[in-house]
Length: 392
Image (tube, rainbow, N blue to C red; front, side, top):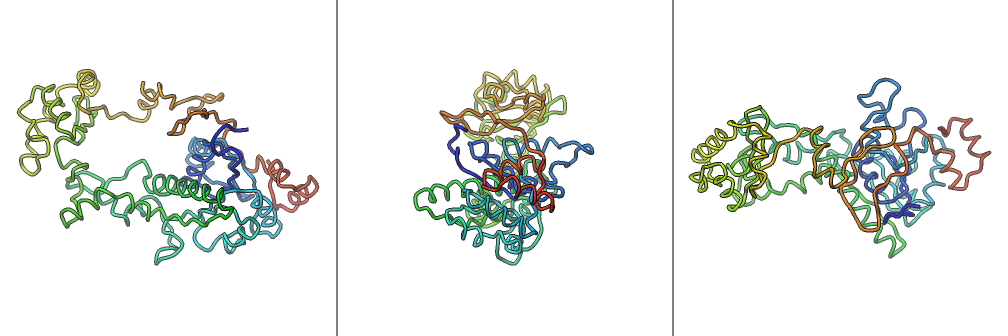
């Protein structure tokens, strides 16, 4: 039995790929029993994403650790009946189909709530359950584009740049859905009544576009890409190249940090240019760049190690995985098969991160979970014979 705060919570996860599985990964890491409900054919196609034929992708393994897999065909009446047996004993359900799909399958909120009024049911989509774009397909780039986030990403004078952290999927989808689910679980524990949750990744991207909104409200016009306070518009906050074609990140927003940096670089004359814009800002940035290009990234890291100035190296992911701070925090570990995994981004007393199972093969736990739900061996065997379920 898990010692996590969500021990005893059963989650049925009908989602695939990244946003939904990342949301339920948070719940699994907190002790919930997450059961992936997959079709009997390919299941979650993240398994083969960018992986050699017949192997499981590192991506799938990373976001599905600690979960169980049940493969059943919801398009068959018997499959839907089996699902409802599982739903009776569940606390949470998450789905990420386009609006209307779960109703067509007969597993929408109204149907599930009839057998389990306490269910917390979350629908996670790109644009939400209503509105003119509700039925449209989309990905992270599309949601960020509509929410005014992509427009702000990139350098001055250049096109919008793509970030390899999927902001809409992870902040908008996974984190926002997890917050809403946990809040609804607290409410259900008090009232015995569940809730329906509608999370749109585009909505969440807009809700978190705080600094662009600040600029719009403060100045009356949208900020120019690469020219706002936190996007490279001032000398004290930006990225500077070094002699080895690597980079350092300068985050010396406050006067005390900027002053310490300028003095450490032997350029106290630049102190007054911390927030300079226009021609003066360009002059100060160029002067700072001319200093940083005289040494390598690691040399600057060593030179400034004792200076409280918010200047850090820009690491690649391989370097980040070896970083001393992340190692001290035990953020990176290795499983028994040698693969690396990243720990959850939270610690809490009385609960140690120790996943007891790897990401599941398709249908690996079908028999086990259906037996727990009250189906007998003969009933499960009949369902398997009719291709209603697939047992791993």
